Length: 291
Figure 1 (cartoon, rainbow, N blue to C red):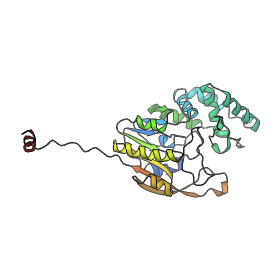
Figure 2 (cartoon, one colour):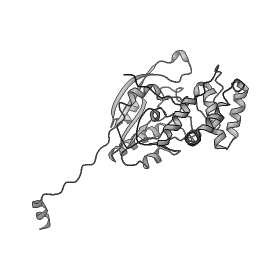
Figure 3 (cartoon, rainbow, N blue to C red):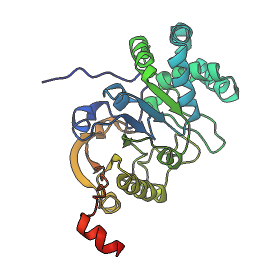
Figure 4 (tube, one colour):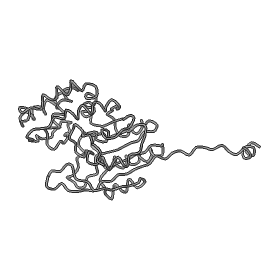
């Protein structure tokens, strides 16, 4: 049975759209789905939890989501004006990119973030050490304006609350019966294969190990946690306390289109450990203790 999947309105390196059928097999039910690394939101858009807590360290991304959540009609009308032939030129792109990097207005930055995402190379989101967006022009014939996807996101977002916190802070704020899905920047398969610079803070191997430790702690507190990552010897080591499942998936981002092959993806599931209720002592034993 082929279920209809909903696409995100952003292009995103490592997006989970193609993995949805497999991924949802491993997501347990819960009162709320928490995503510390929401990215483009494909998991959010293709699941049906009562509520969502969606977080990302990228402030531009979260500001965009909050604006779409509350001002969808106005935002979509304004954003559509940037998807025209005159804006699809390298000179226009560089001018808009410079405007984005110099602007402090959240609404203007949100409009330009969507424009840059759809007109930039491969849909990458990358900043330099100074925090300036530096993705080059994509040279696409006619960039797609995701009007229907924006409206669907806005409707679904009424069940969500957004935050721009560290992943450690998100774990510290888990509500009862929350299920956590973590899609961190992946462990690189080679020295040139890392796309972790979507925020100035980065995400290193120490963060990868700490995330696994937080998942184990959350599991002991009664939360189920699912983490996706590349299937490597190292990830299998840090996720050794989890139930592991590996599948082959196609690369979504590659500098060489002809070289986009299959890589192994790992799902690490930490099922919630339910506390054992304390049973009352038998009456005979209670009398013995009180004597």
